[in-house]
Image 1 (cartoon, helix red, strand yellow):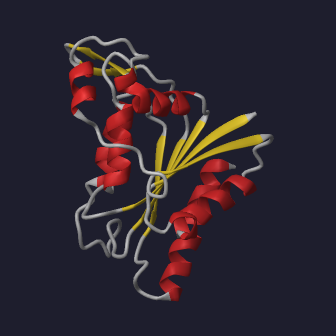
Image 2 (tube, helix red, strand yellow; image 1 turned 90 degrees about the vertical axis):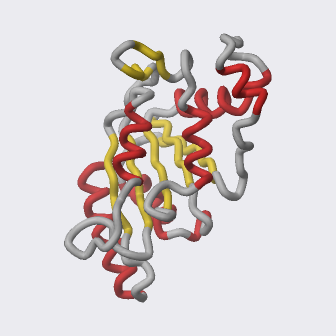
Image 3 (cartoon, rainbow, N blue to C red; image 1 turned 45 degrees about the vertical axis):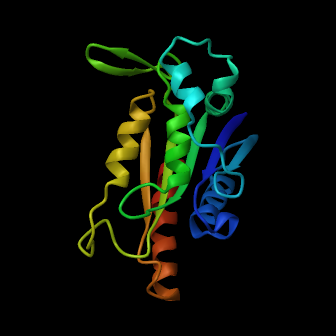
Length: 197
């Protein structure tokens, strides 16, 4: 069985181009006996990091403490899956708040990473990770007119917990009409199918 965690962090939920393409790619991948766990970070938001969590994370509180309830739930959910899909828009050059909050809960000292003199050492098993990044403008290639802080940030954040097999697929220029959307989706579909097959 291939277990896939599909995170959706955009405001359009299951109507987004990225979400529909992720589901289509999984269905066409030829993977047998697939089990998909979906988490829509906008439709079912997770709570922000609060003072109780902050105090617990700096005081060697046990992993199963109530203060870590959401963090532990999200880490275990990630651990239980063999593959990760992240569907995200680019908001103001980087990840949207909903995805950043998931990252804040999942990156936890002595649980998903250890701190060493050389830096963070990830404790999570590496897994194929596919990130579909939607943007109205262009952030990759010769037509790019804005900086892309999302890709290096997300790559670094995931690597800090041990996930290094990460592939990015831009869906860009989505505000330039139906033809631009079709072209963006087709290009991302081709690249995604090459990685999945």
